Image (cartoon, rainbow, N blue to C red; front, side, top):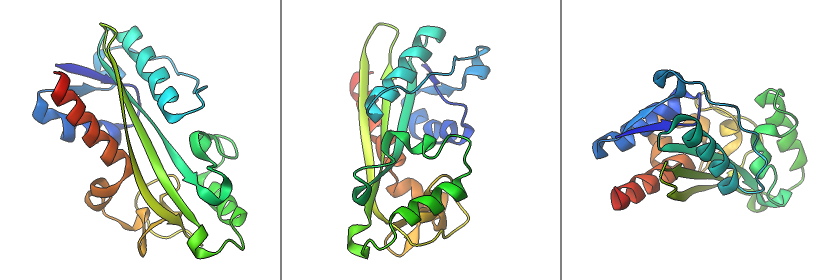
Length: 195
């Protein structure tokens, strides 16, 4: 069964392929099916709303079941910011080293035990027959005092799990505990139930 993924991120495609191919699900990016999905404005107030906006649009435009995810960093001392605005924190065109430096500065003077944060990921799937499902995953951690590590992307270098940042973990180590890994495993379980 063919599924479309509402993303241009080839790494997400590889991750979904690894997780879903044992179910007989083939995942494709839009150009691999000869289509070009519209960019969807993420106007939702929650990760779930944004994931459904992208999945519904992709399903409608392609006629295929479509998977989309929305994720972000939730920092307790910042009342949940940047949250659903993680990618747009300080503006979409602001490089992540600047975003990280600003976020760390916002936490200046915040004690270590109050620097708690989590990455959250919601994966939504929409079928052409109207069925819709969403699952979520999270990974608890803390915001570090400076970027560490060369792997990963986004806020990974300042998100600490234990003594290491996400950017210091191998892809396999990160997949095993990450918010996206957790939500995609939940998605696999949901698809096993319904297919």
